[in-house]
Length: 262
Image (cartoon, rainbow, N blue to C red; front, top):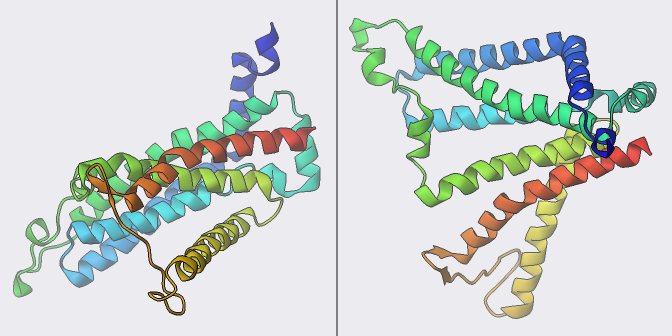
């Protein structure tokens, strides 16, 4: 059938199984490393500060999500070597199936497991603390319980979906960069993202000087704020970027992989 040219469940299953067999140690060590690292960090800070609340957990998970991004940004490891790339692209399977294997492993499966490991590490770090009556330290009182719900409660309810989609968009950018660049994909992607953001800021500065010459000096920006419904135009811009850009990055990654195969 025509669709078998692009996707066959049996062929996809074989590609998926082969990837797990080849990289199973890498995946397991990565998950273990992330868990041990964030556990050690949280335990050390809990033991020294004697107080952890929602603000501290927010910092922990931001740091942790950066580590998750590193894993996603190193997808398609075979593309970093010319010989491995040739063997990978010639392996039985369509471009879509090879793309889907990495997407499913690195994002659909890895992200939920990584978040579960963070939850377990946070609660284990608290449980590992020993009360110290001499200074009045009781972990049950001084260390807050971690839950993802407590993090979401810190956000305005209309910011939750854009925040999640924004994180997913950043991961999609790193995923696309792993296909586009041959070597050192992660640092190159981060540098390119920094250049794009810097160019955007400079363009805002330039337009501020053009349209508001009397009110801007140096690298100052003047951005007019106005309401769009019950939010301002800044949030509308961020919401649109967060909600839509991941589609572009994922499509770009697929067609770039297809281009390499051709």
